[in-house]
Length: 91
View 1 (cartoon, rainbow, N blue to C red):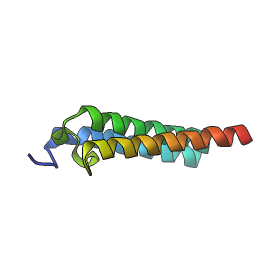
View 2: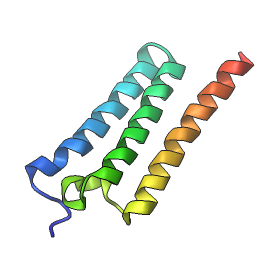
View 3: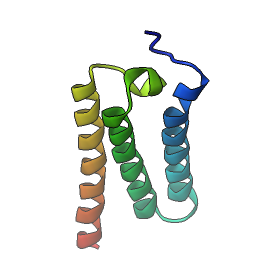
């Protein structure tokens, strides 16, 4: 099993990379809160990709074992979303 996979194994990584880039662009150009939501949703999507796709189809999203990868991405995504919600309530 090749952890790098073939060309088809890169699409989940590229989707996540594009989502993060879009989120950072939204933060820089439009609204930091909206951009943070985009990044949080992208991390949650990465967790779903890592959970449902086999290791040879997730390319660089597979860093550790599946459970650790899914939990870490989901926790970071949820944490970012909760910080944005808390900041919106303060404003």
